[in-house]
Length: 107
Image 1 (cartoon, rainbow, N blue to C red):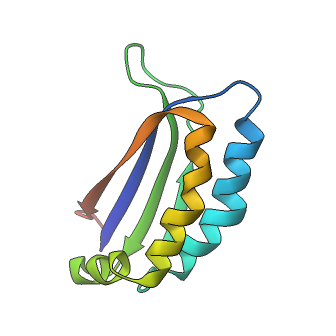
Image 2 (cartoon, one colour):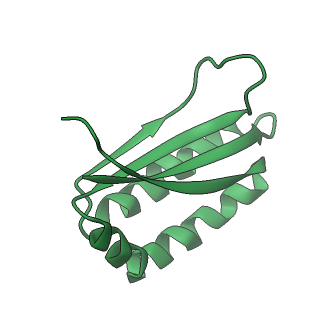
């Protein structure tokens, strides 16, 4: 199994927390679940962190059976929908988001 993860790093603008998470949960999550080959989607909102670490707003994880399945999902028109739906987030936080692909090593 492979997991593609998005890390949203930064700080949500004061008073915009509900709007940010509304877009994540009600606009993006349904799209992410419709991506080709997805077996699971998980969202994590940090509640504590070590001193000196970057501010993380959200960690998103999407599981796929193979690396090729990830490539197929990333080239799909549904990914284009997700990119468009995520654009309003840029007005709600200062920061960036980036991705990692992980291979599961344990059972």
